[in-house]
Amino acid sequence: MRTGPLGRRYAKALLALADEAGQTEKVQRDLVDLVATWDGSEELRAVVENPSVSAQVRASLVKAVATRMGLAPSLRNALLLLSDRRRLKHLPEVAEAFAELSESRAGRVRAEVTTAGPMPAAYYTELAKTLERVTGKQVVLVKHEDPSLIAGVVTRVGDRVYDGSVKNQLQKLGAELRD
Image (cartoon, rainbow, N blue to C red; front, top):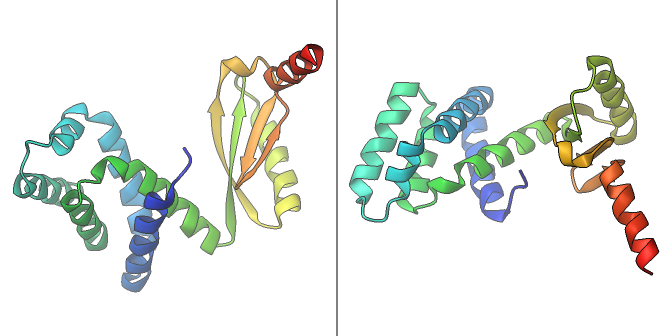
């Protein structure tokens, strides 16, 4: 998932609050759990995103979820702000941006690796070592599979994309043949 300006803005503010409270790692773990709950509960999303649900009901629901999950106070307050501004649907984007910002601050960089099928662990280990040499930072691999690639690998590190997929090669060949 690519994060937009809205997700980064809220993530920066949340990261500042979490740092101030000394709870950056707890907020990160809480965000992972919260997004899993968000993604797994269509009912929760439907209630929160329903325009006929009042702000008070949404706030009560957010407080109940935060209490039940034992979320950090700074995260609970950020959720209430998102709820008040009717932006809870952007929660996964905020969580992704938070992870990227906290990893960057810790000297790590996230690399999204998309393969056509499963790859052996040794491949990912070697890829991480290569990317660490290129970036000069510790690399956190996020693995995805996309059978439409046919074969090969697409790796995204920040704004750079390394596309070694057969799908891409076929598209380039098709463009050359059309010219």
